[in-house]
Length: 93
Image (tube, rainbow, N blue to C red; front, top):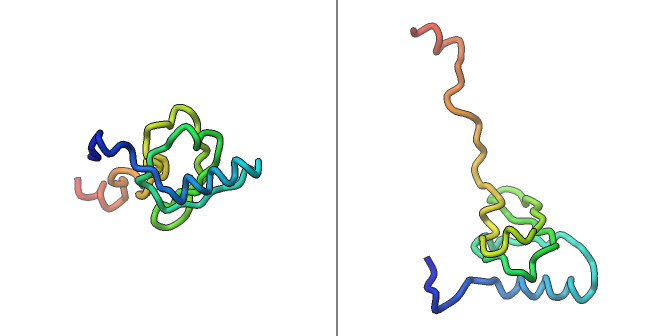
């Protein structure tokens, strides 16, 4: 938990990339590894490629996401379901 005194963590390089895109008027995917960066209103309307440890997950930022962290929208684990019912498991009963 980050202290209130310090304020939210915002990656400076990421903010610079967003400002550069805002000036040029382009809408490109911004790749980032900064999963701990807090989403600020300046990020709304841009697509971020957020790294999940293996690939980049494209996430379009909306107003509802402001205040959350980038990593919340790029899951790192793949859920494959709870214990599959196989033939072998049924025979044991």
